[in-house]
Image (cartoon, rainbow over all chains, first blue to last red; front, side, top):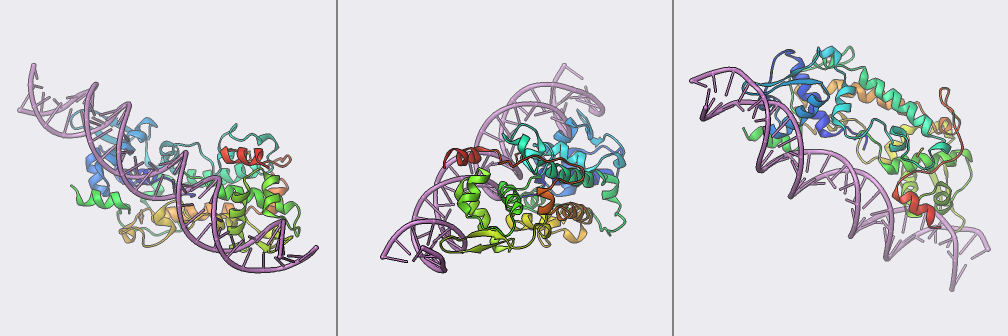
Length: 158
Length: 158
DNA sequence: CTTAAATAGTACTAAAAGAGTACTGTTTAT
DNA sequence: ATAAACAGTACTCTTTTAGTACTATTTAAG
Ligand code: FES
Ligand code: FES
């Protein structure tokens, strides 16, 4: 429905918080508490982010996660790529080749790919650094967790 | 997963074909055959498009559908609005107010709304007229139907 | 060298969304 | 009167998403 998945949304939320304190190590449990989500969910998100080298992990006692680069070098597009399963693109045919039998004769595929390009550029243009400090046009507030059933649960449970 | 729904994709496909012959009346059955989809599905899409005044319908014998305005005045954004259920926006909180308890303190909501704006503008900038004739950067081919299980079915069945 | 606090990985279950179909009603030219 | 076409509704099946559970591995600290 032209939405990013909730996990991706959670990812931006968690990373945005981490970007406020780059270099600092956070345990998944701490982050979950801060952000108001369930610990297993945050854990899942961080593991995926780690596989894509957006965060680095330290195992063992007193381990945790930290950003793997400065916030300015992590874009929303990279977060989306890390947490969405499918390849980027608004339609299946325009996202990856070979999914449509009539690709070669497709009249509108090129247009969708152009649209995809614009959308992607919009996501690339926003970095974590932009997320913590307000953008030119926008005004920002404090910290904030995410809505939905599990965030409420996560909020109630310790 | 950052995709438009298949129905929306079908909508662009059907409308693009109709845009090749503006003012002409097409029955849902004919369009289904042309485009290679199931008749009930195309019917469903056209009904939704009609409710949003993108096509006008003529009932009764020899009835059918035609574009309600010139192709240049119908944007992809309008098609998306007509066929997607949810309000426009990449995240739930940024799409509509009141879905998140912590909206007032949200640090990244403004940024998502800015991203939404860019994405929406990209969709508004492409019209049906652009879809039939290639855009500056792209080259086009002939006609083409859509992939997937039901398109194959629609293709096999008369 | 044992323990406890962490991450890593995998797999499962349940809920939501999406897609397609069926059926019944209404309109209208012939 | 009939048949072709749109209108509306509601239902079922499938796919995707979300969340959780469980087990293994790592490592600082005592
Ligand atoms: S819709 Fe399949 S290639 Fe264009
Ligand atoms: S995530 Fe809910 S308002 Fe920002």
